[in-house]
Amino acid sequence: MISFLKINKTLVIYCLILLIVVPFIGFNFFLKFLGNILFLIFLIPLLIFLIALISFNSLKSKVNICEQCGNISLGKNNTCINCGADLDSKNSKNFENLTNPSEATIEVKAEEIN
Image 1 (cartoon, rainbow, N blue to C red):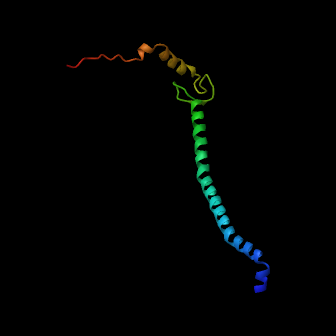
Image 2: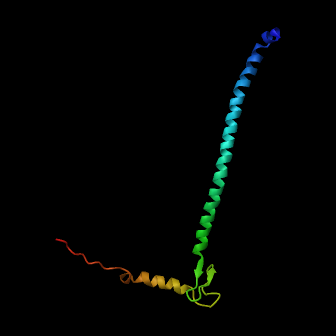
C-alpha cells in the first residue's frame, strides 16, 4: 500500500483535492438551486396577482352601467340591452361639466384678520 502511495502520489493528491473541493461546490450549487426554487414559489403568485389586477382594471374601464335600469354591459355598446337607453348620455353629461368650468368651481372670499 505504501509503494502505491509513493508511485501515484499525484493521483492521491488530486483525489484528496476533489474530495475536499467537490462537496463545497456541490453544496453551494444546492443552496443556490434551492434559493431559486423558493424565489419562484413566491414570485409566481405575485406575477399572477399583478396580471389579475391589470386585467381587472382593463375590464373595469370597459364596463358601462345604464342610468335608467342599472344593467351592466361590457364593450362599446351605445344602447342598453335591457331597456334600450342611450349609454353615451352619461359621457356627454360629463363633457358638459368639463366645458363649463365656472359652474364646477367654488368661490372663496378671503378676509383679513387683524
